[in-house]
Image 1 (tube, rainbow, N blue to C red):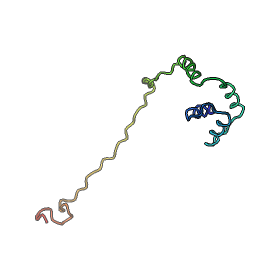
Image 2 (image 1 turned 135 degrees about the horizontal axis):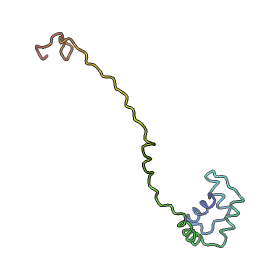
Image 3 (image 1 turned 135 degrees about the vertical axis):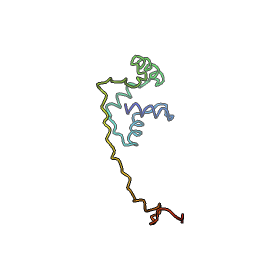
Image 4 (image 1 turned 90 degrees about the horizontal axis):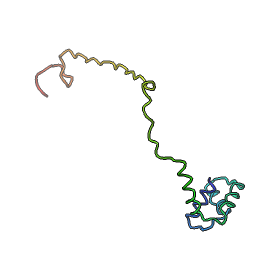
Length: 114
């Protein structure tokens, strides 16, 4: 598959008839190891054929496979439902300041603002 992808990229890049050496160079430039036997078989299969015609004939094969968007899976029912357990949060109690302090920590509970 990687050999075919490189071949097609070379075609898209403007190389009208990429050779096996071109494909090897393209793949090795990005660190991909080339399998010479598979590349030779691909080049033999593509020899003398128009890539556009091959792709057009391949569309008919893809139609047989289907492949529409399958959507998400439906609900699994009650058996798949997990029980959610809520943890009780500790209730914070307010601290009684004994009424003798104001907001700023003064000793008097009332009186002047400042």
